[in-house]
Every structure is written in structure tokens, then in C-alpha cells.
Image (spheres, rainbow, N blue to C red):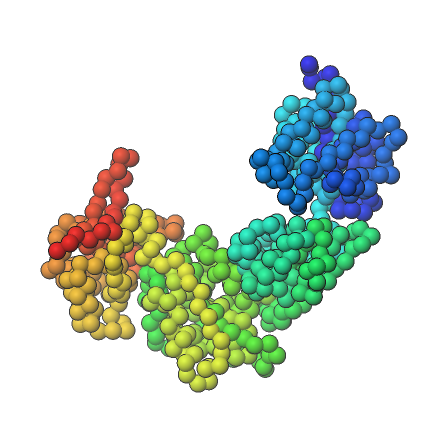
Length: 543
């Protein structure tokens, strides 16, 4: 049968419920169609039909597509999925019969046909066989935001749309990272969604919208909603964070302070960096004046070794929720700028001052995120903050640590699995401990045949430590012991090389490099594609 002899399929978006929100095109298509199809439960009522009812003609052929199951159990041998798959196949066949007879078929869909709509199941089965047009409709998300009367997303914010049927852990992680969000398909999932909002720290911001634009519409703070009263056609909304009424951070602007702090203190972060002292830092006068009614806190956040792909969902959420961001300039530059957040950048040698500054902000009621490269507990900011927080006047300030991917683990993954057995982590920086201590630890770890992850191996002002470490290790390791040089892992200058311990050249090691030195069991193998990998067996030979 030629295309000209077949009918045309339309997926018609009806909008969120109010018939006056149907588009002109939707009304035109319904008026001209031969067949009007719509889904319904076994009770026979169809919200889609009720929205379009005023535009239906007595001579319209109506195809009611009745779901075999909704939330109840089924005895279908394929279970719920099997029953629904069979239903969609049969429904598509019914519509195909009309199309083959040359009739125009309009499938009605609440909201937008391709946005969590049942029409898409017909579309996937028929659109490649018949001429098809999809008529977009106003989504329930747009309607909910309009009814709340608050911006959904603004500027560079990202909207996340989630089905409430996701597992609670997944919902929690995604809500923690979202700028703004809409959680659909509530009903029986409402208790899970509410717990996820609470666990992600977003419950106070969440709004509830039920049957937006319909006669039974209801809006409320989500925390106040009775779970027993929630129907399927409702959603949770996290509106834009910009100028949110619950936050006072926007009143203080979003520019970094310009006061210099040059107190000498080493900040040997979890990823290597340089030894400069030249960046601005906000002093205590830059903090908002006066006490706040809400309690402040400091969250030390691990950024991982590079850009946003290395951020955990928890870390991303804490960065988004902070009133103030405090950190070394290079690391702070990796965090997206958000309106209303204050950014306090400083040099990498004012670690102690930076920690006290963050705690002072928290004492004034601010929610402060101290950023740290890699994992904040590995040669980084967590210790500095906790050290200060254990002294007066900061003992009562809440402090939390949010972990991040370490430089050692990132470099190891790029090279293979050199950390597959016992290993030790040692910093070669002698700014905070004598070289004699470092040498003693290197000898002990080497004698114990541990794989070594060597942080802070060198910089502009520290040029001899790598050579000395190589000499010490060769007292216990074979010259052909593999050494992984991981530079700028995850960044634009990433480079991973594998060399023999005897061939380790200090000139090839800079402030952005981490070294992984194998044990006696670590192996280097060339794979079939020509790449070399390093791995350490999990089983250690018996004596």
C-alpha cells in the first residue's frame, strides 16, 4: 500500500489539564481527525479525553486504549512488563488498522506526547511505517512552575526532571546535585521522594503541586503535605536557587574579596601544585556582619583531581548549597560561579588562615564550603579546618568532610591497577616535616615491599627530593621496578608514563605530577593493542 493511501498519525499534546491551554494546532488536528485514541484505566475514565471533550464530534471514531494493569498485580507470565508490552503491541495494531484504511488517527496525550507520555509507545511502533506528526503541549512541569509563581531555572542553572519511581539512594544523589528539579509520578512514591529530599538537604526548598491548572489544583510546601493525600498527578518542585526567599546570601553580592593575606603556611593538597604566594584572600572584615538566626557550618569538599567529571554527587550538592566558597584560587576556579554565592580565593600557603576565615564565616550563620583538590583528608584542607575547629572560639562550629577522588587513585586507574595490593602514601614535601623523617619512612615502606604513592615530589623550589628518593628506593627495589608518572590526571595536560625506577629522571617530574612506585610483585605488561599497563597482583607469594 503506498504512503498516499494510508492515514496520518498524530501525537497530540493537550497540555497540563486546563482545556484553554491546548494549542491552536492541537485543536485543528483533533477537529480534522477521523479517529480519536486515548488511554484509560479499567474504570474507563480518561483525563486526556476530558481535556479535549469540547472538540470531539459525534462522528469521531473513538479508540479507548484500556491499560490491563496500573498498580495492581498481574498473572501475566511476563509480569507487569510483559503485560504492558503485549498491551502496547495490540494497541498499535488497532491503530495501524485504521491507518491502513486511510483514516487519520489522533492519539491524545496529557502534557507533551514525548514527555513521559503513553503516546511514545505508539510512536515507536508506528512512526517508521506511517506519516507522523507530533503536536507539542505545555508540560506539567511548566504548569507547576507557573502555578507556584516562582522561576524554575535562571541564568546557567540546570533543570533536572526525575521520576519518583527511582530508588531512594538515586533520588537522593540526584537531588543533592540539582540546581532546580521536578520530581514526577508521586502518588505512592511520595514517602520515598520526601525522604530523599530530606536526606539531600533540600526539603525546606521543596514545593508540592497537585493537578496543576485543573479544578482540584493544590500547592503547598512539600514538608507540610500528608502522604496519604497525594495522587499520581502531582509533583515535587525545587525552584531556582537564585534569589530564593529562604536564603540571605544574595544580599552580600558574589564578587571575591580583594584583601591580601600572606601568612606563611603550606597547603600541600591531595593533587600536586606550585609554591606561589600571590593570590588575594578575604580577611575577617569581609565576612557579613552580625549574627544570623540560622546556624552556620563548614563543609570541606573534595573536588577530585580535575574537572566536574570527577566530582561526586554529594560534593556537587554541597558546592551548590553553600553561601560562601573558600579555597586556593586554582581549585576555586574549578567550581561554577553561581549568583548569590561569595567566593573567597587565596594562595596555597595560607591554609591555616583560610581555615579560620571559613570558621568565622560559619560563626556568623553562613554555610561555607572549603574546597580542596582530590580528597580533603589527604595532605589537604580537612586537617587544617579540623585543627582550627578544635580550638576556641570555633569548638561549637559544625564541620563536615565530603570525600573526593584522590590523585593516587586517579593516576592508578589511568595506568592499570598498580595499587592492587598493600600500598603506602607519602608526601615528599619537606616544608612541614624534616627530610630525615621522609627518608626514614621511605626506607621502611620500601623494606616492607609496599607499593608507594609519592605526593608533592617536586616544585620550582624543591628540585632534589625525587633524585634522593630514587636512591633510597634502589637500596630495596630492583632497577626495573615500574614507576608510573601521572601528570595533570583528568586535565588538559594529562600524561601517563611508565619508566624503570633506575631511569626515573627528576627533570621530568614537576609540581603537577604524582609518582606510583611498584613493589617487587608489580608487573608491566604490553597488551595486544600495544598499550602498557601496570598491575600489582592481589596474592602475595608465601615465604
